[in-house]
Length: 345
Ligand SMILES: Nc1ncnc2c1ncn2[C@@H]1O[C@H](COP(=O)(O)OP(=O)(O)OP(=O)(O)O)[C@@H](O)[C@H]1O
Image 1 (spheres, rainbow, N blue to C red):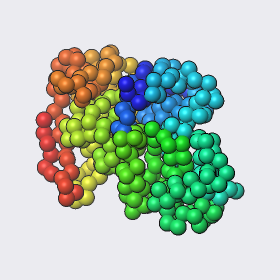
Image 2: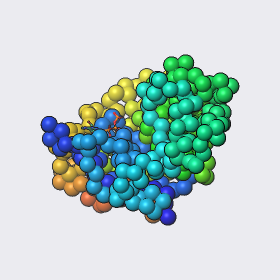
Image 3: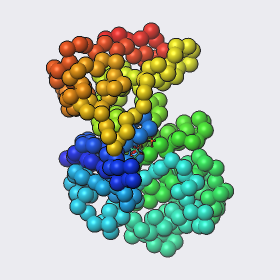
Image 4: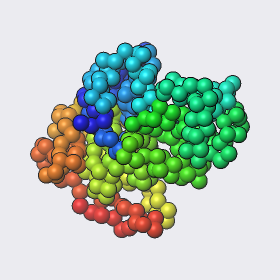
């Protein structure tokens, strides 16, 4: 049984401008110890999907579908139960660590509070555990640091402290939403190294990121979202070296590369559609260079692109309904960081 099972998830926001279907029929699983990257442009529904799993959508958000964690339905769980799981068996790390810490309590107090809430440790044992967790996430002189306030921490240190807090309940799953965004490049790399060190057979990670480089480096499997739907799902190398969906290929071509003077902006033109009135058929068809008449009528399922079925893409090319062929080329980055000549298929 998978650790996390998401089945036909729909997230709707009720706004003055109409009903926004931020996530529309999303299904995926995450195994124990696995690292799943969730990528896509801004507005793809990455955060809404993560918040739905955590039961953290704001009041205008409504969920349909089924979410199971370790066999237990989270969609059927009451608020108390969800709160116990969240921060306990599912840890979270978000962007903007300074905003996530409370300025009036010391960092150690905040981590100790999470330890008290999610374990049976109390008093001095909880404080000791907080210091041990700060040590675990690589904060030097953790006992002194525990007594400091958030404003005394740099952005990178604050993010480490939040990772420590996320570990308070000894989670099986860490949901990290843009955890390195906003940190400077060196600090980003260090934080990724820390996550790499923590994510073992005992800790699965769902990493939400718009940064394809981060995902390529860290994840085992990748889920590509477009306009609230999964358009491609594959093991990380397959996805980056042999994307099967025109949107993924466009995303990869949009990544700027050192020494490459070609106009990358032409790689993916247009923007994410209005999710209160998405285009009919394949949602990507207005931006797709391969679109045919059929694409305006049929919403393609996430179909197998090979015999094994592990690499799936939602494109009519894989249901036999496209008369043309997909022949996109994708530059891959070789080990020394340069782009090679392109890999035409
Ligand atoms: N609280 C909300 N109320 C109304 N609409 C929302 C709300 N939160 C998200 N949305 C809408 O849902 C859609 C998906 O948003 P979401 O934040 O999940 O995208 P994302 O892929 O995480 O993008 P980003 O990278 O910008 O965070 C967008 O159209 C967004 O405007």
